[in-house]
Length: 169
Image (cartoon, rainbow, N blue to C red):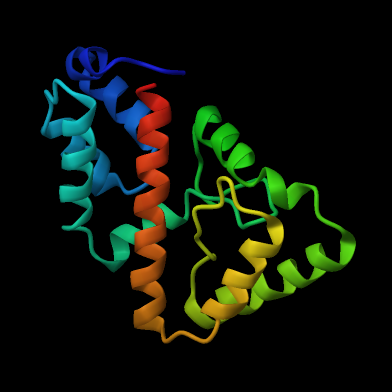
Protein backbone atom coordinates (compact mmCIF):
# COMPACT_ATOMS: atom_id res chain seq x y z
CA UNK A 1 0.00 0.00 0.00
CA UNK A 2 1.86 3.04 -1.22
CA UNK A 3 0.41 6.46 -1.83
CA UNK A 4 1.69 9.77 -3.07
CA UNK A 5 2.02 12.84 -0.88
CA UNK A 6 -0.65 14.48 -3.06
CA UNK A 7 -3.02 11.60 -2.27
CA UNK A 8 -2.27 11.89 1.45
CA UNK A 9 -2.87 15.64 1.28
CA UNK A 10 -6.29 15.32 -0.34
CA UNK A 11 -7.82 12.10 1.00
CA UNK A 12 -10.60 12.29 3.60
CA UNK A 13 -9.42 12.71 7.19
CA UNK A 14 -10.49 9.24 8.31
CA UNK A 15 -8.65 7.59 5.44
CA UNK A 16 -5.52 9.69 6.06
CA UNK A 17 -5.65 8.80 9.76
CA UNK A 18 -5.92 5.10 8.94
CA UNK A 19 -2.92 5.27 6.59
CA UNK A 20 -0.81 7.27 9.05
CA UNK A 21 -1.69 4.93 11.93
CA UNK A 22 0.17 2.17 10.07
CA UNK A 23 3.32 4.24 10.68
CA UNK A 24 2.81 5.23 14.32
CA UNK A 25 0.20 4.06 16.81
CA UNK A 26 0.06 7.26 18.86
CA UNK A 27 -3.41 8.73 18.35
CA UNK A 28 -2.05 12.20 19.19
CA UNK A 29 0.63 11.87 16.50
CA UNK A 30 -1.90 10.63 13.93
CA UNK A 31 -4.44 13.38 14.69
CA UNK A 32 -1.81 16.08 14.50
CA UNK A 33 -0.39 14.72 11.22
CA UNK A 34 -3.89 14.77 9.71
CA UNK A 35 -4.47 18.29 11.02
CA UNK A 36 -1.17 19.59 9.61
CA UNK A 37 -1.90 18.59 6.00
CA UNK A 38 -1.22 19.51 3.23
CA UNK A 39 2.45 18.59 3.13
CA UNK A 40 3.20 18.81 -0.61
CA UNK A 41 6.54 16.95 -0.35
CA UNK A 42 7.86 13.82 1.30
CA UNK A 43 10.53 15.88 3.06
CA UNK A 44 7.78 18.01 4.60
CA UNK A 45 5.91 14.90 5.78
CA UNK A 46 9.08 13.65 7.50
CA UNK A 47 9.88 17.06 8.99
CA UNK A 48 6.39 17.47 10.43
CA UNK A 49 6.39 13.87 11.71
CA UNK A 50 9.57 14.62 13.68
CA UNK A 51 8.19 17.93 14.90
CA UNK A 52 5.06 16.25 16.23
CA UNK A 53 7.10 13.45 17.79
CA UNK A 54 8.92 16.13 19.78
CA UNK A 55 5.61 16.96 21.48
CA UNK A 56 4.70 13.41 22.54
CA UNK A 57 4.76 12.45 26.21
CA UNK A 58 5.28 9.10 27.90
CA UNK A 59 1.66 8.01 27.53
CA UNK A 60 1.73 8.82 23.81
CA UNK A 61 4.87 6.72 23.37
CA UNK A 62 3.37 3.84 25.35
CA UNK A 63 0.33 3.95 23.07
CA UNK A 64 2.63 3.80 20.03
CA UNK A 65 4.65 0.91 21.50
CA UNK A 66 1.46 -1.10 22.05
CA UNK A 67 0.98 -1.19 18.27
CA UNK A 68 4.08 -3.36 17.84
CA UNK A 69 4.44 -7.07 18.47
CA UNK A 70 7.17 -8.14 20.83
CA UNK A 71 10.38 -9.00 19.01
CA UNK A 72 9.93 -12.57 17.83
CA UNK A 73 6.14 -12.58 18.19
CA UNK A 74 3.55 -11.90 15.54
CA UNK A 75 0.75 -9.98 17.23
CA UNK A 76 0.68 -6.54 18.81
CA UNK A 77 -1.42 -5.82 21.91
CA UNK A 78 -3.36 -3.10 20.13
CA UNK A 79 -5.36 -3.77 17.00
CA UNK A 80 -3.34 -2.81 13.93
CA UNK A 81 -4.06 -2.61 10.22
CA UNK A 82 -2.93 -5.56 8.10
CA UNK A 83 -0.29 -3.34 6.47
CA UNK A 84 1.27 -2.48 9.84
CA UNK A 85 1.29 -6.16 10.82
CA UNK A 86 2.91 -7.06 7.50
CA UNK A 87 5.55 -4.36 7.93
CA UNK A 88 6.33 -5.56 11.47
CA UNK A 89 6.77 -9.11 10.25
CA UNK A 90 9.13 -7.97 7.52
CA UNK A 91 11.10 -5.72 9.86
CA UNK A 92 11.57 -8.60 12.30
CA UNK A 93 12.23 -11.26 9.67
CA UNK A 94 15.75 -12.04 10.95
CA UNK A 95 14.37 -13.01 14.35
CA UNK A 96 12.00 -15.54 12.80
CA UNK A 97 14.94 -17.52 11.47
CA UNK A 98 16.90 -17.92 14.73
CA UNK A 99 17.86 -21.14 16.49
CA UNK A 100 16.12 -22.43 19.58
CA UNK A 101 18.79 -21.19 22.01
CA UNK A 102 18.78 -17.64 20.65
CA UNK A 103 14.99 -17.63 20.51
CA UNK A 104 14.77 -18.84 24.14
CA UNK A 105 17.23 -16.18 25.30
CA UNK A 106 15.33 -13.52 23.37
CA UNK A 107 12.01 -14.62 24.88
CA UNK A 108 13.42 -14.58 28.42
CA UNK A 109 15.09 -11.18 27.90
CA UNK A 110 11.85 -9.77 26.42
CA UNK A 111 9.96 -10.86 29.55
CA UNK A 112 12.61 -9.39 31.85
CA UNK A 113 12.59 -6.12 29.90
CA UNK A 114 8.80 -5.77 30.02
CA UNK A 115 8.74 -6.57 33.72
CA UNK A 116 11.42 -3.97 34.45
CA UNK A 117 10.17 -1.14 32.22
CA UNK A 118 6.45 -1.83 31.85
CA UNK A 119 6.45 -1.85 28.05
CA UNK A 120 7.76 -4.05 25.27
CA UNK A 121 11.29 -3.76 23.88
CA UNK A 122 11.19 -1.35 20.93
CA UNK A 123 13.96 -1.33 18.35
CA UNK A 124 14.18 -0.51 14.67
CA UNK A 125 14.77 -4.14 13.73
CA UNK A 126 14.77 -3.68 9.97
CA UNK A 127 18.08 -4.83 8.53
CA UNK A 128 19.45 -6.00 11.89
CA UNK A 129 20.46 -9.55 12.71
CA UNK A 130 18.83 -11.48 15.52
CA UNK A 131 22.15 -11.46 17.41
CA UNK A 132 22.38 -7.67 17.07
CA UNK A 133 18.81 -7.25 18.34
CA UNK A 134 19.47 -9.60 21.25
CA UNK A 135 22.70 -7.77 22.13
CA UNK A 136 20.87 -4.44 22.14
CA UNK A 137 18.09 -5.87 24.30
CA UNK A 138 20.52 -7.27 26.86
CA UNK A 139 22.52 -4.03 26.95
CA UNK A 140 19.41 -1.89 27.40
CA UNK A 141 18.29 -3.94 30.40
CA UNK A 142 20.94 -2.01 32.35
CA UNK A 143 19.27 1.34 31.72
CA UNK A 144 17.13 3.32 34.12
CA UNK A 145 13.43 3.69 33.30
CA UNK A 146 13.97 7.28 32.19
CA UNK A 147 16.91 6.37 29.96
CA UNK A 148 15.01 3.49 28.43
CA UNK A 149 11.88 5.51 27.69
CA UNK A 150 14.04 8.05 25.83
CA UNK A 151 15.82 5.32 23.85
CA UNK A 152 12.58 3.48 23.06
CA UNK A 153 10.99 6.75 21.88
CA UNK A 154 13.96 7.35 19.55
CA UNK A 155 13.62 3.83 18.19
CA UNK A 156 9.89 4.41 17.62
CA UNK A 157 10.76 7.59 15.72
CA UNK A 158 13.10 5.56 13.48
CA UNK A 159 10.36 2.99 12.86
CA UNK A 160 7.85 5.74 12.10
CA UNK A 161 10.21 7.34 9.60
CA UNK A 162 10.91 3.99 7.92
CA UNK A 163 7.20 3.29 7.62
CA UNK A 164 6.40 6.76 6.31
CA UNK A 165 9.02 6.19 3.62
CA UNK A 166 7.36 2.85 2.78
CA UNK A 167 3.90 4.43 2.74
CA UNK A 168 5.04 7.22 0.44
CA UNK A 169 7.34 5.12 -1.76
